[in-house]
Image (cartoon, rainbow, N blue to C red):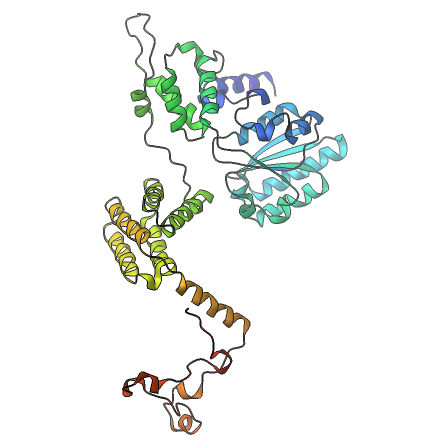
Length: 423
């Protein structure tokens, strides 16, 4: 980097968002991840020895995955190469690996390749990393918000250590906010802002574990806080009402394509199964208010009505199908109360999984046994030849018998005639 590039980088840093300026530069500034980077954790020891294994950083947005990568860049003697799977291609990856191989061969220089949002590469594309990781040409650090068990190539995952970064708690975010308010070089310390402890706590809670969100909101609030126009010494005051103005909408932790999506639909399902209408309504609200497609929820309710209620209350399926049709007709936000009615009904309804178990047993027999022939007496016999072969012979037409017991006959194949699927 020459003098002009250094000057440009400095100017960009000055004009960058508060969250970027306040990124921790050392492990001591890195808040809320004691299990991952504390004195007892493997990562700190590995950094001190400059012997990092390939790793996957897994955690929700705003907990410091990219920041931890940059701290590693400051501490390691290896060449550090950041790469984004959003904008980069597999060809770019191969070029980086080729360069790393050349440097390792001729200069004995190790390369750490930090891949942000590694889940954006599909599992086939992730194969590009595997040979270089196996041969030690690169140390791979991947960052992802998604469960690596599902989103990272199994062969690659087996060669990496998974570092779980937890959602930041309120005290950790409070510390981050206070540091930003007092830091005069990178933060807002020169602006002389007034903000009470209660408001800082409120902002930390609203952020829902996301430090980036908290700092972005603080920066907006600082910009719109009333400043003195007559030269008086009045300090700009950040109040909770001002925070509400800074927040365009409530930030809900919900990714319609990510793990949290499945966690919340699972919570809804289990709450209804457990007869807890209050919890079921809450999880329904978490989905709808975050923008979930209402017909997706309605489809899950239709399935639940048969899987978990079934014959215990056949009207449950009627309720669920009607709710689906009503949601299709009027959409959000009007259909929210329709889904709420259906969820409450299903939660309070008696439960039975007899149909679900019965059909599961049928599937098992179909998988395990050969295709059994239909008994001759219940076969269709539309032609004379079929009748001559015995198709339909001996069949008892049930409505013709006054006593139902006189019409008893076997309907299952011989091998399965004693099966009781529905108990």
